[in-house]
Amino acid sequence: MTVLVTGSRGAVAQALIRLLRERGLPVRAASSTPDGPDVVHCDLSDPSTFATALKGTTSVFLYAEPSRIGEFTEEATAAGVEHVVLLSSSTVLAPDAENSPVAKSHLDVEKALDASCLHTTALRPGTFAGNALAWSRNLRSGRPISLPCPGSHSDPIHEADIAESALAVLTEPALGGRPYTLTGPESLTFTEQIGILSRVTGRSVPVRAVTREEWKQETAGYIPAAFADSLMDWWQSTDGRPIELTAAVEQLTGHEARTFETWARDHVGDFRA
Image (cartoon, rainbow, N blue to C red; front, top):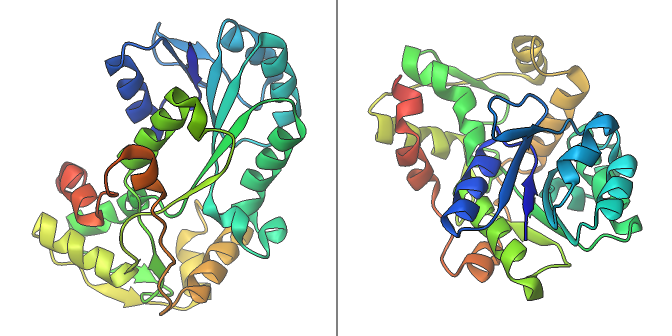
């Protein structure tokens, strides 16, 4: 079994590559911007890079890039790929997923894979704990963190748990072929997450409640308006409403999902640098 891991510069992919290598399994790291001789060029928006990257692979860990997913499934089928594990998102389960910029890219890839001949397993994590890195500059500087919905709940999941779940479905054939909704073990508000980060790092950071428009203005330089609106719609829908949690991580890995505090301690250096 040779596993092609796309998006190899991402936190989940890096963790999965380490796990596969520790198992002694052949793995091929792939990136749209390869940064070393051991990384192959595979730009999921450029079909000319697909054939070389896929040659000789039996399984693929796939990031959800919808722009050329049709060509990718064709090349993967031609290359003899037996199993695709997709890093999707739990947002595809939302009633308005088709109209949500946050969800639609993942949903389009899931649909394309379902329509293909490829054996597919979709991993649908909720909120990545790593999203909290967006607050790192504020934690280092002591500036308030602006939030339109401080009481919005999420289910932060450690990237290591996603990687271990991917390893399980890649190496245990009986587990594949169906979707898994992955969550962390706790439903936490933004305020609670920031409190945990403050405790772990020893840095007190105030939270500043802002309006939707104020937050859009603050983030306009790096978050498109439609995407920002979609995020805030989701945050409003979970404001004061805990997220429903699953046991999928434990089912796949044999251990409970790591807490957000564990993630914070694992990444404390990112907040102190």
